[in-house]
Length: 352
Image (cartoon, rainbow, N blue to C red; front, side):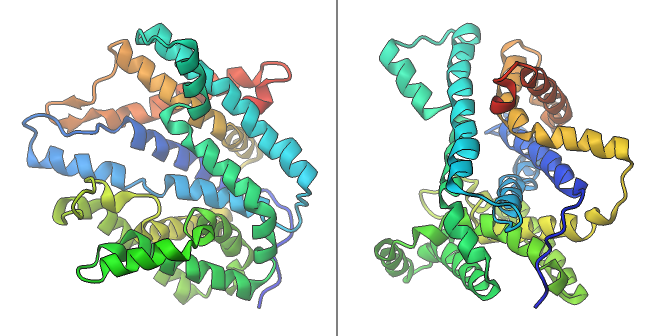
């Protein structure tokens, strides 16, 4: 068993992964919900494949959070957990949620009475579900840290996570057995291992025990991740989703194929990208972009919705997905907006 990797060091690979994941989230959100009318077979294929290629984005964000919050060299007393991490989430949510409603009122002609405004503020805009996810992970972090202390316990938890995840996401749809599996899972109430907690632990586990992964095992993980990425990208074209499920059934963040591809990409950055030696100036630039990740996530919907509502955004041109070309533009504009908001005295660092 390897010793924990406790030595603090410059980890530009994490900043790069954050930036790449942010670009992936933008692709997921600006991708059209429907292919172009009368589009070619190529346009239909790209409509399915391109968003599916970035389904690792949110899982990688969660794994990065786990790498830091579950690290024993970073003390996490309850006072710090509630007074720093959860308080920051609460302040950011309280800023962005009404900001988006006001944005809709100003640019889309939306109208709300007081009760509706308050209700929607408590719910948040559609991409703000991530706040609730982070809050839940923060609340169970002290429990997950105890699990992460022991390798055997961590392995047991991750096995449970993957097996239960497979049964929930695919097993319940098996002909003849699906109903029994679904019924058993409903009665078992294994909620702790059925959410994103597995990603949360996996991010730290791979970091802590990276030296235990042999070159052969590493190559096997990369191969499995590539095959799962291909499956995720092409399944929507070749396979029919179960009755009642949407066309993105195989691309959901908790699907086993997405778990494997996300773990493989995270491991690649951890083991390979981390070996790249960046200049101090570039490392500082990437670090600054990485630290603004939450702000980019919160601002990007406002940015591309502004482009759409102003008539400066076209998703398809002659059946080709030009919306992909807007991804770096939306990222840079969101980054700039987050940077400006960060300059607000006292409040800035708490909302981005």
